Length: 173
Image (cartoon, rainbow, N blue to C red):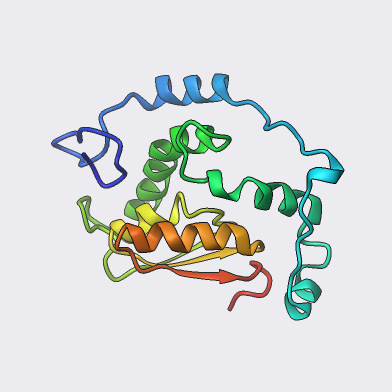
């Protein structure tokens, strides 16, 4: 099993054995918009006043409420976030290709050691965790405590140290 928990690795690249073109097309075809929650089913998101002031206009509270309502599903590979689980290998290949091209980082299991990564809108940590496994010092930002609670718990269960913060991209420094 590889760094991402997705099966065998290509011996030359340390990346999961898949065909990106085939997999991406399959994932796009399988993508379905999650059924919208009825207004009475949406939990109310309560944010501290300083965060609320920062996110005014930057975050749609209805969208945040929808993600908060299904936060416990982030790590269910067959749940509402299934498309993200299926796309993660391609997303990580994109990130790693960009890092290798721009920073000259070698491939390998701890290729991001000594680097810092910020995952904006981290949700349950589906990208934060692979970045941390690859050695990056990761900060995950999200605007719902429910998502961050799931992300923190999963990272702790996985033995990863990730700095998850209730913060917007605009407020992060």
